[in-house]
Image (cartoon, rainbow, N blue to C red; front, side, top):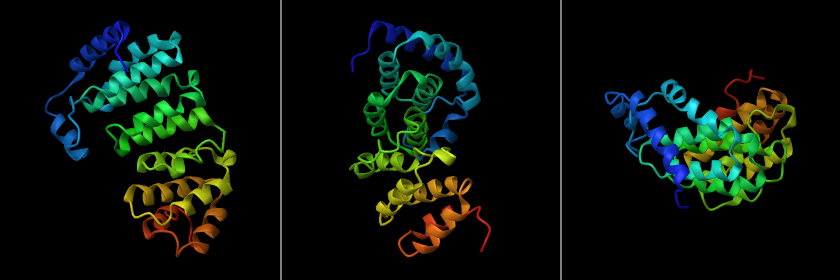
Length: 227
């Protein structure tokens, strides 16, 4: 996706804003937290949001396609803070997006992938889709593990709007996976739903204990009172 002149101006202003907020002494610890996978400027979350908010607020009249263009442009920059600014932007303006934009967001999930950006995209996709329960069925079977994780997590916070049977089926479909981030996501999705429907989660995890990974079972029951 080429960078337009307006994108270039936006990125230039944003780069200056983050540079002013950067603390080079903080960067090594931030890189270590991300397992040395990404460069960092050394901008903590509160400072990043404060620096980016004025520029992101100016996008209130931008169309969905422009937001997607900006997100992809930010994703191409090397430092991790820029991907988080993209998430800040999409979270601020998610109301402009609809299900037609989900493929572009899932594409981002497969670039520079790690839990921090993938889980941020999951929340944005959940906001866009609520409550279109069927939309992530294909994503659940995607070859990319991070896309499958988004399918598991996109109903977080839906409470009484959660499609319980679909959630439980999703968990069982992926229950045999050995990947840590999938096992953890199964437990997280169930733990979140347990805040609204503790009995349903307790019964499900007891009945399916042999199919669920121990990590998934522990996470799902983390805040449930024992029988």
